[in-house]
Amino acid sequence: MPAPPAPPGERPASAGAAGALILTAVGLALTAGAMLLIPEASRHLDDSSRFGMAVFGVANIITALGFIALALGVLRGRNGARITSFVVFGFAMLFNLCLGGIMLAVGDAQELPWQAVTFTVAQFALLFIDLAVIITLCMGDSSRWFTAMSRARRAGAL
Image (cartoon, rainbow, N blue to C red; front, side, top):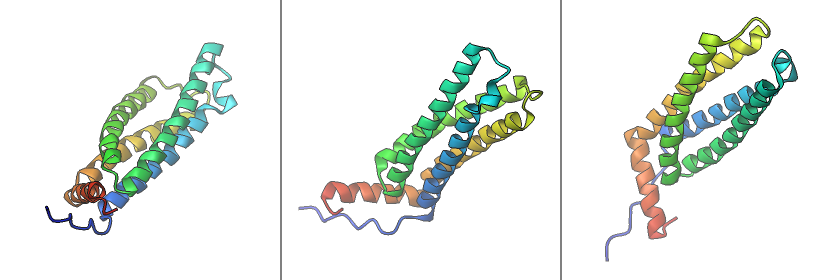
């Protein structure tokens, strides 16, 4: 009979930082989503553009709720949440880079300058948070802890 797995130990700072960064991304995504739902932000647009902004705003809010689930999984040491975070935040990085670039290239700040600037800054802040989440989850101590947590769960120690 093989020896029982070693206890996983305390959560490393890098895994805690990843969870905190994910929750920070939640706050920014909720802010960006709410900004798209402000009625005055779409008063100069036609109906189909207003609908698009509303759909994107609601999608941003739903995505933020999914990020909360990922943060909880990461903070609990779930390796599946860690792997899912790599994929989700990799795609989020690309999305935020593209959207931030589009906002800089064609954003019309004439009508509502503070919303356009705030939304663009939020998108680029999310880009760097996405990168930081991926880096902190790849760090050695974080990776070893997630592996140890996974082994302990499989062995029934947790």
